[in-house]
Structure formats: C-alpha cells, structure tokens
Image (cartoon, rainbow, N blue to C red; front, side, top):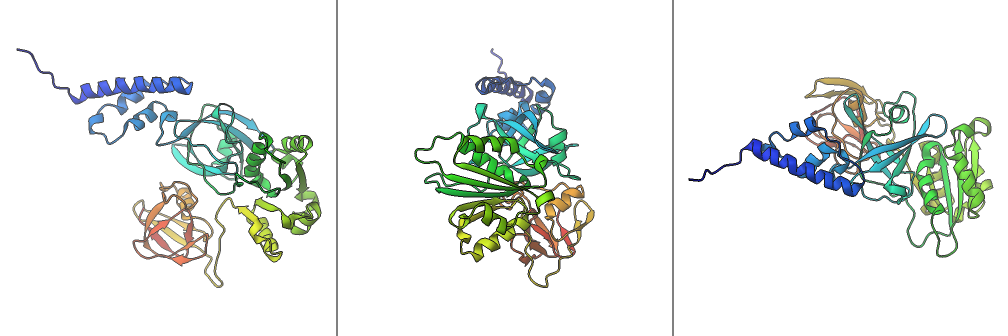
Length: 396
C-alpha cells in the first residue's frame, strides 16, 4: 500500500527557501548583479514561513535589499568629495525605485549603531542617469548625526533605504518658461543642480530658455559645484552664473538681485536656501506684484507663531518608554524623540505620508507649518510637523 507523505512545515520551508533563492538569482541576473549567498541569514528567516505574515517580497529583501519592491533601497557605488565638508553619493537604486523629476528630493534611511535615521536630500542627478544611478550631495553639519556619517563614514557598498521622490520644486514640462531666474544659497543649490544638469543634456526643440543663476555662499571653497557650473556657463550661451560670497561681500539681498538680473520681475523664479533669504524674497516679490512668479523650496517647515503665542516648548514624556526630555517649540517632536533615544515611527518626515502618527495623551502641540495650536486627548499627532506647545505626553 503506498505511503502518503504529508509535507511538514520544515519541508515546506526548505522548498520555499529553494524556490525563493532560485527566483532571487534569476531576478539578479536581470538586474546585472550577483545575489549574496548569506545562507545562515536566509535559513533563519525561512524556518517557519507557513506561520509568518511576510510576503515573498520580504524574503527577497532579506536575500538582497535591492530586490525588494515594497521597501526600496539603493547601494552606494561611489562617494566623491565636493567642496569643504560635502560629498556626493552615487546610488544604484533597486527594484522599488520610481523615476524622479528634476528638482525633487527623497528621504534616505541610514543605519547608525543599529538605529535607522531618515533625512531628506535633493536629487542632484538628471532623471535618466547612466546605469540608472542617482546622486545626492550632502553637506556635513557640525554636531549633526546623519550628515557627517554620510559624508565621512559611508563607503561604497553601503545599502541605504530610499523613500519615494517628492516635491513640487520642479519645472513645467511643456512649455518651459522662456526666461528663468534661480536664486540659491548654501546647499540650496542642490535641487537647482539637478535641474541645470538636466537642461545641459537636453536638446530643446526650439530656443533654449534663458537662465540666470544667482548663488550665495560663504566663500569660493564652499560653493557647491562651482567649477562645473562655471564650465557649463562658458559652454552654454543660455546660462549665466553669478556668485556672491558673504564673508567678503555680505548677504545676497533683493537690491543685489536687481543689479545682477534687472528683468527679475518678468522671470519665472525658483529659490532655495535658508528661511531668512526665502522670507525676504517672498516679501520683495509680493511688494512688486510678482509673487505668483516666485516658487520657493524650504528644507524644513517654517515655524509660524501667532502674536503672543508661547514659544518656550515644554517637557515631553513618552508614556510607554518612560523617557522624558525637554522640547523646543521650533523642533518637530519626531526629532525630539529621536534625540532622546525613542524609537519614533516615521516616513517622509515632511508631513506628507502620515507615517509618523502618534496618539496624544495630554497637552497641546503647534503645527510648525501654519502656527495652529491644537491637541485633544487621543488625537493622532503628526510628529514630523508639530512641536511642543507646553508640557505634553505621547503614547509611545
């Protein structure tokens, strides 16, 4: 009498393991790179797949993070020094990456001492780079946690998590404005670099748009992409580049813009840099009746407070973890919690994806984008765009 063999969980695990490894190698063949064997890691992850809620994509991500479509990642293939304290990271994205538009930014997740930290950086490469690589250029901030790590301690081969490309600091596809003005300061040059590099490689069906770039930097050594932009301006008749170095000539102000670009009122303008510069430009453009021609990109939400509002922040207690810390009114609660060592849920870090929601137990918060004061017990708080408005407790 024949013996009926019923597959056991261990047999199923072995079969699923073999199938997934084979599938992973076939996918890697299309992607142009080998799959690490990592037998111990795969075996431990596949011990009991029948009882696991993970999908096949999760197992592929364990074999090689670049194979995951649900959790996009990229591998650093080169790190190139730029100006003082800055570097460009060239990243080969995996299966989950979708193309970006020039001028957009993306969240980047980096592991530091076993903790994943997310920061947002502008994409400085054109949408279709050679070999599907993309670049971000990072300036190491003194006392920072993530930017110095990316600039000084991220070797080629490092895997970074990638969020989706985001942002509306982009140019219309068709038709392009005939005359453009770009006003940037410091690392605000990074999204504009992506736009100009795209223009430099494009064949325009008609006349190329006339582009003026005004950039402010402390000194020539801290002007990102200075040599490249000078070479582009020398080669491309439609591009003019003007630099102002604050240590010798003072800050860039609207009066300087009028001298360097007399027809600024008639140009479509894109501006990116510190809040002080952007606030000044917004007032100046509005006073001239040209506010609709100005688009600005801020690297973090601007704090807007109503007259007489409390700006002292408060003591924050994270109820479940037992951590307490002081919070500034101008700092997102997400960053406050991370600095205190709390595992904070997060996503885009810009108030878009709602991946940072945490229930409020007690207290009030202030929206850092609008200045609105709000908060009721049980309300879900976006910690990436809300700051403390007095003592509060979060259910985390």
